[in-house]
Length: 181
Image 1 (tube, rainbow, N blue to C red):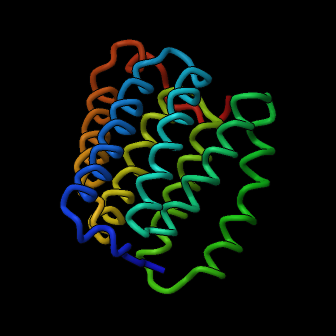
Image 2: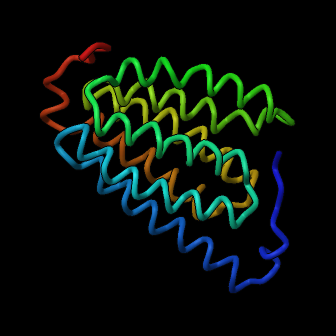
């Protein structure tokens, strides 16, 4: 359920929460310029911990849960070579959480985004970048709904950044999109 923390009323606190989001975003941007999926994941795990704090302080609990789950999921991706099994194992968790937490369609956007992200992270870099375009677009919509303005702004920039990587990175342009490793 979308819930807004009373602390957000304090302007200084609100801007502090937004700053946490900006720092988390900087780590995401840097991650997509790494050469392999494991390096991308390492930066994203640290970033996601900061997003957890950000969403908790805003009272945006669906975003918080998905961020916590992504830290666990991405840590398993990072530590093992069982990416496909980890993704398949996460699908029932997404479904159960979606059913138990459903109060509005907006609450499902982080779940859809994380599912897309989880799938693409099991693939090659070009697919990871394309998946980020789709999944972060969903986060932009959710961020606006929960008043995570730094999230909406930064996720929008991530969409544009990944779009430019997808369209103009010479190494990626040579690769065909392959949906398997």
